Image (cartoon, rainbow, N blue to C red; front, side, top):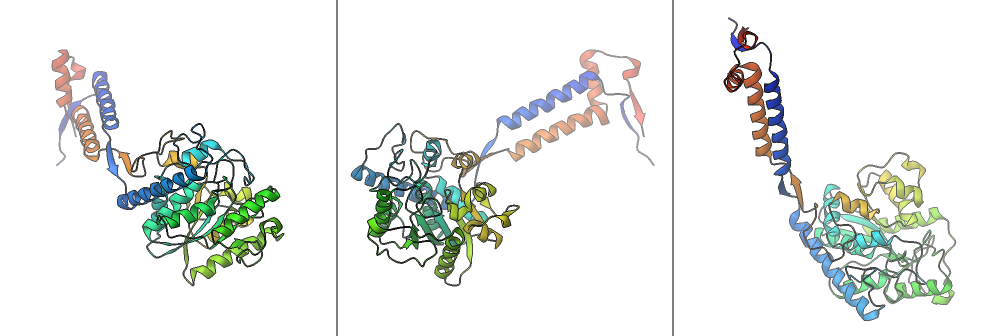
Length: 400
């Protein structure tokens, strides 16, 4: 027995207009009343950001003691983590807006999120390749590793690009030591290179080479000389000449160092900070990997050699901390902040999402309206009473 129901022969234009207005109003309501949702790993993210801020304060104090005076036109947040336009240890050009955007302790929370997404757990080994170009990001990365209690194996670079850690009295090895001395971190690089192009300090004059090697030596680090086992530097700074070993030998030496210090444990992730050519695989490698977490190797990665491409090909997730402004946009962090951002601000901590009960309620109401005007005569009768229409062709008819 088929069921008989009643409906109008056609849906009137007023009914269609009313349904459209209801739908548009529902959309506006849903968009207007979004809610703030707590992101995962909130406690770890806050702890990492607070630790990074503590590290920022240590370096700011050191900069105030050693000079030069912090320039608010260059470093509006007065962090002390932005260097000078040019110095003897400046290896390459740098973008001031990127350096200013990096002055945000909440980037430590971003690194925590990426490490969690890479399935890194407490006690896992994480390899790091950092330079002096983004000291703030280096500190944030160290803070994330300390907070998550992973084992970081760091090969660092002592020289820096413009506006990085390029104050001769406060290079990255000096910063790393001060952070340990003040009990912020317990992380020490397993080796430190001169930095610059291919880790040979290409572009630095003799004075710059002396200053870089002096920084490495006074902080008790091993000078990483490409192609030869890194040992404590015995050369006097004025006589030090970077090894003329090819690019591949440099990569292989870094891989050997990571493997030896891992002591049989697998490397669960690789973090690159900046654009070190040996780490990323020259400029093409820097562009091939997208900023942030790369769980899989990019296409054509076999055509590029570098530490990051090699580990990626082995299935190791890599975190590529470059294009700082792109990362800031992705995680809703401010660009070029003029004051130090507060802990817990940004989309990495709280996201804006739709209210599910509100979405369900609006959708249900729209469906009820559609049923009332199309599948039954309720809407027809309501509109007929409001308009006083009694035309024959508007009367409901039986449907099977």
